[in-house]
Length: 338
Image 1 (cartoon, rainbow, N blue to C red):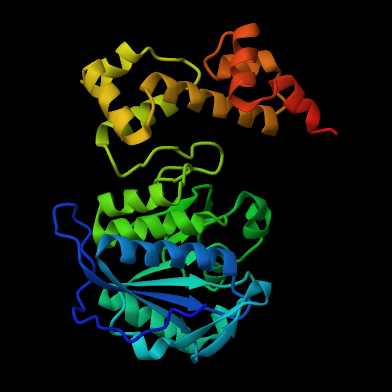
Image 2 (image 1 turned 180 degrees about the horizontal axis):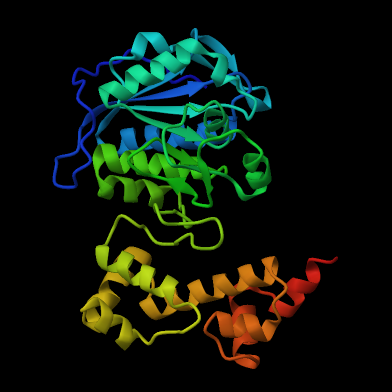
């Protein structure tokens, strides 16, 4: 697995964040790896960038980098050939860091110096998975928060970190970016592509990967991960946010249209185009997903879960759940104890 190639990037200006600015068609993304880096997250991120590069006609120079260059072995007995980070400090728009939890970034003075240089140039720093935690522990992640997988929350709280943990899947803000979870790498790649080439290209990439749990900057690990191609339609995005806020107190589609100042037909057309379904069906699926999460993660009764998901308790909820998941909510809960 080798993506090393000579950079042809000639514009050292940082990538513009304005939606009204024409996206760059020639940019450079560095993937910085340490020994035992996570191959799964690396492969997801790199393949999203490379597939988009081939299919969209836009140009991204993908540079695989390490402290000294050469071959670096990751997890799963796989590895990559790398260049030295110091050779690319003046041509990167993004540096995405992959590493294991015990990566000793804090003692690497050269890496610390390189990060300071890149930030001064306007290069965006992003860390994926355990690398985000390691950078946070070393006080090298410049942000207020760090995206931390729910399984690692207690461990993160024990770190001497100046950051607060976040249950967001991706943290995309003015500071350094971070993501958690294996598919969080793909989410972060989508956001990088949106910054480099615009939202339309990013949406096509998400659709190519059939990434039905694509998260936006507000999506959390606790069930608020949205299902749409989030970069496609502002009306769809607004409707989904409204649905999310009203999982228990179910809205009618007429009420949704009134809040969004849209006609029912316009809302229907946008959902059919970008989601392949009606807004009513989409909303119903979101409430069922919420109900399934409550079945799996809480001790709430099924009656409480039905009400909390905007369904009438009893047969209507049971039949809807069975039709969606092929198992009743009661049997799903029982299976947890098998």
